[in-house]
Length: 382
Ligand code: SIN
Ligand code: CO
Image (cartoon, rainbow, N blue to C red; front, side, top):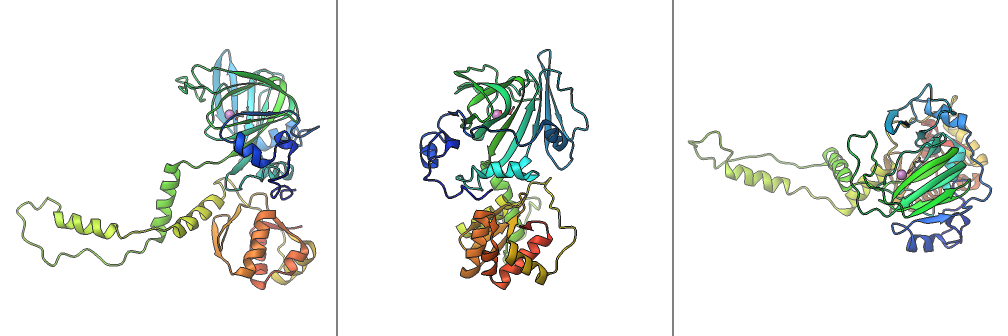
């Protein structure tokens, strides 16, 4: 269940090799790799190979196929109606965002909610035939690599030389300098900080689950923030030059015009509160390929309220819900909340579900919002 560990930061977790989330974050996060044998003891891949292949055939699922032939790398983007034979060596299929489509994958991602949802990205599943992998590379993000099926050998290194091989469809480092070598079996997990080079090669067919993070680049944030500002900016008035003098250089932009425009545009201000609104809406926005499935037959508001009070509700795995201060964000929309409603909505955001009793205590406004979200497929009845 998604909620069951989010408040466990002081508890020692097998998932972290017996460390508390606090100790893990202090000593390893962004700093050094951690190999955890049997992070999930007796782990058996919840999705079969065929289920992963079926996801890769869907156009609302992001997938990539990496093949290696006589030392030549090839990369293709899904959807894939057909894949190479599993008996053929040296290929790998990567399926992104599996948590959005599969409750078991979503549950698994929930075990990592000692980290903020604003940082947690998705669960990627990679299938590799014998010898398959994506080459020695580094990522800009932290990653947990959980071995789900079969064996994969990881060679990892701190790598000071980050130059890449030229002319390849994949980012592969030129001079890989591995320092450690680990064979991972089902249930074993390897944490890697950003920029740490790694190369995982399947020994026999295997599946690896990557728990990925999101760390937006400043440039990405800036571009999106300016877009947000463009939609909300309010700058009254207009350029005027009552003291205009005649010119003999009509093509020249008048210096006083430049001054006036500079002054006017410097009146555009933004505060932490504007940034909070932007950030919440931005981080809670679904990715472009995400669509919500509305229920087949919609219950009217009063019937929905009755059912929700009895059964409780849960966010769809595709919903992103965050909050900051009095604002609640869901799937790119923001709501200002009063004290009473804030409690129920924060509970929903943190637990990703509300029990029937929780719903029974909620105001009519909250029930209205829940009903709207249910109609949009953002929230489901338990
Ligand atoms: C893989 O599972 O093959 C790639 C995952 C990664 O290197 O981040
Ligand atoms: Co990687």
